[in-house]
Length: 115
Image 1: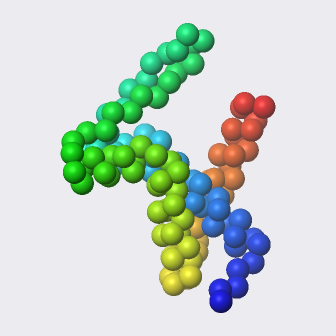
Image 2: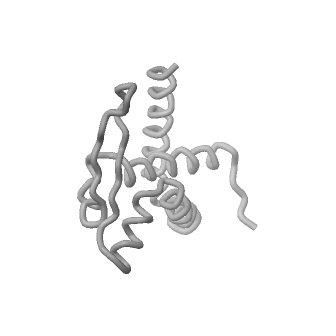
């Protein structure tokens, strides 16, 4: 049905990873989460910071908050959007490539930082 090269698949995977992380965790997109979530950090007994998430509201607001608090859930929707854009809007490919490079850099940085 749709032919996709391994390199394009890798680009889509890394772009999905980076965009999902951007939506769920990064400070720059906190304005998206703020109406739906309250996030705080507390140190555990080992001194590690633990992320505590409180979902706000009821109904649709709560549903969106539950979605935004789950990187697995957001990842599915981001993947659907990225694949749709890749298949039907070829002009977005440079943006996907930028996200993929940023995603690869994040993976490398994490591996170097945490060993």
